[in-house]
Image 1 (cartoon, rainbow, N blue to C red):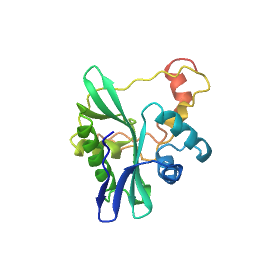
Image 2: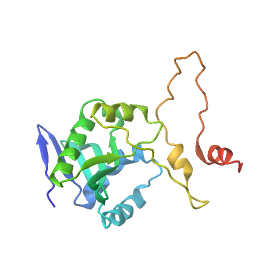
Image 3: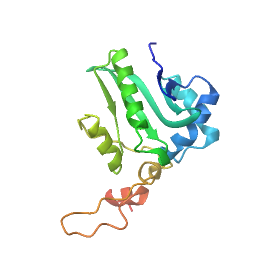
Image 4: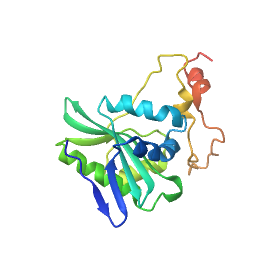
Length: 192
């Protein structure tokens, strides 16, 4: 595996190699995935790592500022680097950490001879979309999913919004209670 470590002043980026690394990444990852618990995080990562998952950690000094989970996947279009998770520590967003980590991921994709770098982003993460578009990413597809178990937490997919809905510019009033979660989904399906 040809994974590089980037060092720029006090910033380092490297793949998590120890449980200490993984534990240090948890508070930042939990900002994107609030349903995760500290106790379940390490066992989940270990299972994912057996399937090729890698956790990249950007540190400034000893402090974790951003993390990214990714995999190299073989697809019919050729190999791709797929980013499962990319998050910057909330209080330090817009300071360049996300850009540094994104550039590092792009370098990894090139080193792995990938055809492209891909990621999915939740539809309400407007700030993230602006960031990805600024990185020259293109919107190439819609990602559809179907929950197959009744106990699957749809609210984990729909309910972790931290960004406000955009205010319409056409004179309409913003929706004060945008649709979320299982009740919204069941209503759309005519099952509520």
